[in-house]
Length: 64
Image (cartoon, rainbow, N blue to C red; front, top):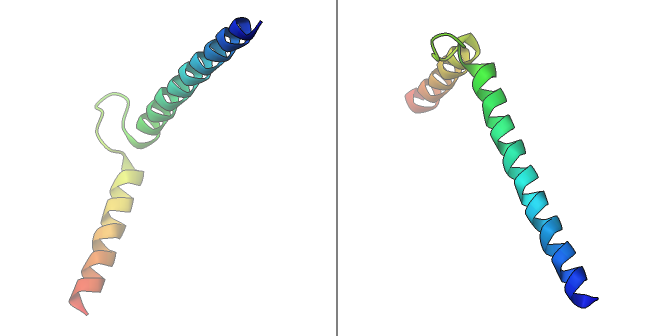
């Protein structure tokens, strides 16, 4: 009985790890689609706006 319980536990852990890996891959794909052009793969406007905002903030901090 203990062996069966151990086997079930191992299978449950493996399945949970697979699901977590699949979720991480999906999150990465969604992030790519949200921030890059599908045709060219180049960063889109939201990435550019964030980059410009970061550069301006950095410039303000270092020029004071």
